[in-house]
Structures are given as structure tokens and as C-alpha cells.
Image (cartoon, rainbow, N blue to C red; front, side, top):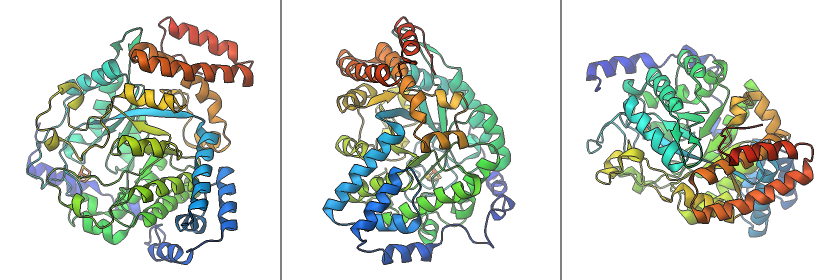
Length: 498
Ligand code: SF4
């Protein structure tokens, strides 16, 4: 399957289409005004508590904050005021997403990459990496393990930037994932939503992937700081083009892919600046297209095999700053989903969930082919970085249930067309919960019956009982319909939703 070096070079040369970048720019300038951001961060030191409380009230009305307000939150140091911010962040999350948490697994399709990002074990100059790209048959095996043994319904499928894993391969492997259906304890398992984390693509490729069903299209800018971006993405590589990456969400929206995830890799530059970058990105998309990011990710730089940069960065983010940045993102872009990953250890994950995160991965394996291989050797050589939490989905769900959260495997919104502008309106008005609460109960019931250990089942059922009682009291007209579906699911029917 190995592509020849000259084929790879020819492929790289054709990737970037400058006209699909410049058309969005303002006189050659992008929408990250670096000097202005630095100035706002400097001038909003020691903000007035009264102003901070007004900002919190604005977040609670589910309005995106402006850059001055976000800079002010980033500069709060008073412990009492920080406590008020954390409380408001959780309130915002509950208002928009209630007590639901979505779980997913990342599925890495290969580790061949034409880039040379200093922080990544997949970079092309890492000659200790054992390279591999999954074949459609291997993709099927991985999906069977995820959907049939572990019980995932939702994936983030991760593709490196390489001709072997280009748009056609993405389309082919997504079809292979959706085709898998596996018998489970009481029903059957299937991946119902495959989100894609991939390199920036052209409008033509995005149109093609939109037709296959790309899910949420995630591209992280990594760092919004131009000079740092240049430093960590060596010149001459595809990824060194800051603007091609920055404007890929614009291209996606124009191509009809309207469910988008942005993110930054925290630890490359000053974390406050990166939060501002994410905010400017969200506001730019809202302004130009009326659709902000459906999710924001905030991975922290983690050690990676044979990748010294990851251990030496002077911008590593402390635990306290990490919690603060999650709080501020939650408040600044109140409607968005926040994705917390297994890079973080269990203790940090517990704290971060209470700051308003909405999605998290579990049973995570990031080695290529690692869900079905069950190998242990060479795992370090096959993965992009090291994980902080290797607990099973069952353990994570049990802990979430004990904390009062219901794990939702619902993917109905996407399949009913509740994406783009429609989902934005539902999220902002707090109405998405009407469908989601019901679907969370139904999908959680499925999962408990098909995959849960006895202990997790007990913890999960307590949560379900509380949720059903809430529906009985607050939505009496819908209640009988819910109970009908609920009973049918207990009898082995699957994939019923509102
Ligand atoms: S971060 Fe992504 S683009 Fe960069 S080397 Fe790693 S896989 Fe390739």
C-alpha cells in the first residue's frame, strides 16, 4: 500500500488552492489580529468584579462573549470570583446540555503523514515510528471491536495527511464503518455517528465527503499564534500554511458541511492567547455564516515517543490554568460542545466534567489497529502521544452515573437534520434538550442492557429512574410515548429515537 516518494511529492504540490483561501481574507489579512489580542490581554488586568458578574449573566443568557469580555475573564485571579465563574460555567452547561455526557472513541486510521510537526510522534522524520495504514478489512475489525465488544456508537475517526489517507480513502473507510452491525447481548451494535478529524481539504473534497456523511468535521488550528505556528510546523511542509488551515472551516461551510469542530493544542504558546484565538474563530464563523463551532477541543500537549519537543515546551499548561481555560471557553462560547479527552488523568477528568464539558472518550486506544489487535508490543511506536486515562467505557460510565450524569449515545439529531443553523438555534434557546433527554434515556437503556457490568448497570439504572420521573412530571404528554419506546428497547428493539 506504500505510496512512492515521487507520488507523495506530486500529491503535496497539488494540495493547497490559494484561491480557496484569499477569497475569505480581508485585504490579505486573516481574522486573528495578534497585536490586538495581546493588547486586550494586557489592558484587561484586574477587571472590576461588577463587570465580571455582568459578563457571567451574559453567558447565562447563552450569548457569545466579545474579545474584551473574554480577556477580562482570563485575567481574573481572585479565588472568590473564580469560584463564581466555575459555578456559572456549570450552570451554562446544564442550561444547554442538561446532565448529559456523550462518549466516543477515537479511531486512528494510520500514522503515515507528510508533515513534520515538532510535537507529534507521527511526523515524517520520526524514523522510530512503525508505519501502518488500515485496510478496509482492518477498519471493519476495529469497528466490530468498538461497536460489538466495547459498545461505542460514536467515533472520531482520525486521518493523517498523506495520499494514502486522502478524501477517497476517508469516504471508503466511512462506508466500511457504517456497514458494520454486530450482535450484542440483547440486541445489536453499530456505529451511528463517525466524526472526522482530518487535514484541511478543498471545497471539492468537502462536497464529496458531505455526501458520504462526514459527521462533525474537526480541524484544530493547533496554535493561533502565527510565529509559533511557523516554528512548530517546519517550512516546506503542507501544514506550514497557516491560512490554508485557518480557513478550512469557511470552505467546509461553503461546501455544505455545517457541523464543525475547532480546537487548539494547549502547550505550544500562551494558553490565554489560544483561548482568544478560539473565540475569534467562533465569532468569525458566526459572523460570516451564522453557524459557530458545534464543538471545541482543548487537548494539552502530552509526551510522545521520540519527540523531545513535547517534554521541553516552555508553555506547558498547569492543572490550575487548564481548569481555568475550560471555564473561560465554556463561558465565552456558551452553546458549543466541549470535548475532554483521555489525555487527561481520571482525577482531572472528574474536575473538568464539573466545569461544563459535554463529551469525553473512554476505552481509548490510540495505536493503529489497537482495538482489535490486543497487542502490547510496540504500542509506543504506533501512537501519537501517551494517554492519561486508560479506563474502560464501563468504568467511565459508572463514574459518570455516580456523579449524576447520564451517558447519552444519541445520534438522532444529526440523522434528523438537526445540524448547522438549526442546531445553533436549538442550543442557544435551550430547546435541544427536549429531544436529547428522551433519546439519552433510550440509548442509555440500550447500552446498559447490551454492555454494562452488573455494578455499572445498578448505578446507571438509578440515573435512568430519576430521568424518567422528570419526564413524567415535566412532559406528561410525551411520557407515554417514551415509556412505549423504553419497553420496546428492553425487549431487544434498537435505535428508536425522537
Ligand atoms: S500533528 Fe498531524 S499533521 Fe502533524 S505530523 Fe502529526 S499527524 Fe501529521
